[in-house]
Length: 244
Ligand code: MD3
Ligand code: FE
Image (cartoon, rainbow, N blue to C red; front, side, top):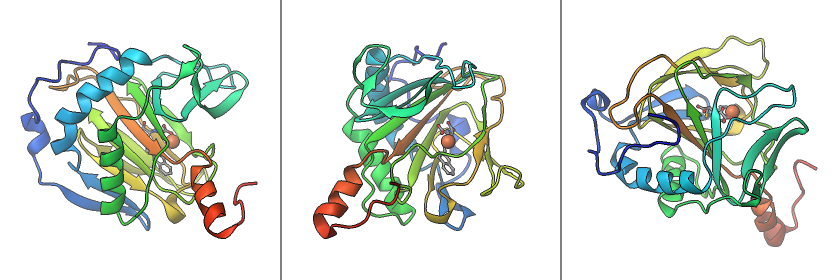
């Protein structure tokens, strides 16, 4: 089972290991919440759409400005996709591998992200970007901040699928102590406000086989990355541009 090889969507909705606990909300920080099991009822609708996106924009290992190939495979859908190459990190409307626009964001992705943002108390979330990360056993993401978005006021919504991960939730400084948070298949995390720029990362994924996704963890991260929000604000109130 490889990152570009999802199992057929006709497989069942839940595996038994996913049903250990009822859906509930866990407080991570002042404005971050883990919605345990929130996406489980959505998974059978999400997976076929995910497969369609990945057929058009397969996972690839991008190179960082430091010259390292990421251990996480990346793809995107929506108006903007996050990319990295030796010249830097950026959001791009075009998939650099195909030179075509990223696949459209499936409606059910947007609906899930909006429902999760609402459930965590962030109304009006309208993502223009969905980054799709594929972790194999051993893949990790080092501690970092997400700073390539135009406006930090919108929250970020992340959905975990497949193998479990230990998420590292740090502070405002790289040297701050991190909390270790297990993230399981179907968990959704919403981060915003004062927690938006906290350092975070993912520990190396342990070997294992998930009943639906096999030997991988797929994480979908929904963001308002571009200027859409700002346009709305400007047309309403001729407001200021926060990140200029
Ligand atoms: C906490 N991905 O792609 S998503 C990333 O599981 C990234 O693939 C991780 O970090 C993953 O940039 C975690 C969750 C996430 C995203 C943004 C955050 C957590 C965050 C911003 C602030 C604090
Ligand atoms: Fe991040």
